[in-house]
Length: 255
Image 1 (cartoon, helix red, strand yellow):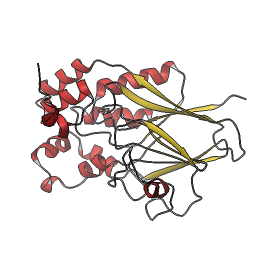
Image 2 (cartoon, rainbow, N blue to C red; image 1 turned 180 degrees about the horizontal axis):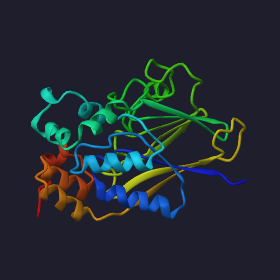
Image 3 (tube, rainbow, N blue to C red; image 1 turned 90 degrees about the vertical axis):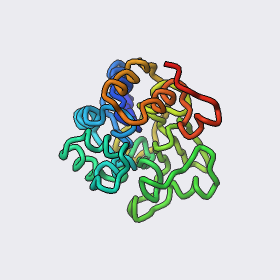
Image 4 (cartoon, helix red, strand yellow; image 1 turned 30 degrees about the vertical axis):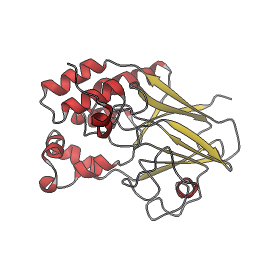
């Protein structure tokens, strides 16, 4: 049996250098289907190009929190958020705003549900360290996910931290981040393997891939374009440490 392979990417955040490296690796492995868990733009300098590449390459993209923010009217946004919003075209913003919240599929008898952050909405964050109640809620039917059959596999993004957890026959995984990883400074994506569309039990696998890319080239683009918060962005890309912890850890820009 030849298994179908699906690449799951998330949180590109306008980092075109990382995105191109990840898509090249997906192509090198011959993976034909790419699914995107949102946050295509914002934080990084080339959101419009990331949107264009996503529309070209991804079979399905679900809406992330940044996608929702950037798709809204810009009057109430901060100056930084307005920069990222204004970098997008009107058509880009409309596309982001109209993305679906969730996507379900069958793979070797497993019901797989994909969304950006949680079963509640694209804004409710579930960290790597979570309670048993939060784990169970990720598999729940809600107004956001609809009333379809309960999933046995749930994949999400948002926290930029790759992991997998299995409990009581349910698998929860985070695909990590392509463009703004906060676990190690290499781009991440997940690979699902199984028989797509089959409700019969069969072989199934889940794996993660880390892809090095030219971090310094991406930082240079951000600086050249005058992107807001470029110093914090540079530190995050180099260290994989969230900007809210830079001061306490004494992380400063060195060049």
